[in-house]
Image (cartoon, rainbow, N blue to C red):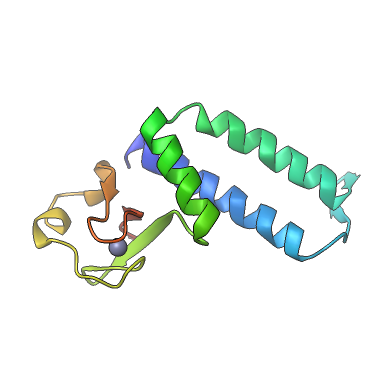
Length: 118
Ligand SMILES: [Zn+2]
């Protein structure tokens, strides 16, 4: 899989966890030996997100930020040739690649990053 695509998916996961914590309110977590407040957990996620961001090119960082800020997802799956960001069919030439996840695809219609679930 494309290295930056992998990083983007990881970052998206962290953002989703962050959002779940925020929406869940102040419930504290028990994570193994450690007990931490939701606030601490969010701080830890933010630190990891910042660290991961450094692996991305600047334009990719900016695209990711603007997408995750306005949509729930920045990276969307392509299933049966359809982008799940906008439900528009993707050009078939893309999906015909040996492994389309080896490149970083951006939807020409909605601008989301795309990945192909296997
Ligand atoms: Zn799309």
